[in-house]
Image 1: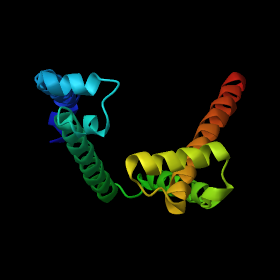
Image 2: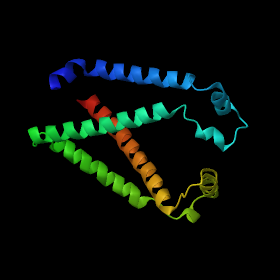
Image 3: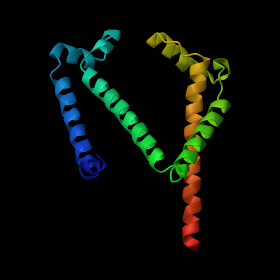
Image 4: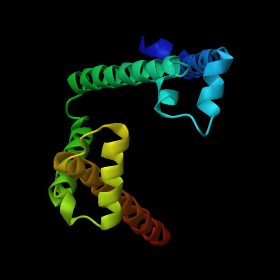
Length: 170
């Protein structure tokens, strides 16, 4: 399996991507004209979100994402079992990522009333328009994810600078 994926893996992935994209585009353009007109209309109400023209693309992307996740987990576990000592860097990196995510989550605010008025208005509009329940837990998760992303971007920029300076003197 490894030899096959090593030899044909990129071509196979590219071919599957082209095939899925072609089927998705064909499914969009084969939608009934009335449905496409409603989607493109600026005056259409909530009924424009009930279209099924994009279902194949959504389901295909979800399936491929789950397939990639399962494959990454299986191959990661196989690599860990085959070479546990060599996998320590990956394990430590994963632990560091989890710690950074926990730091970002713990720094996040979960009280909607303490947010800026523009954010409170956006949350209220989202709850009203989408008939959703964006509560403090959701705010904490989203804010924590944004803080985590900012920490990771800052760490990557810092590492670029440090290793760039290190490369000058090496």
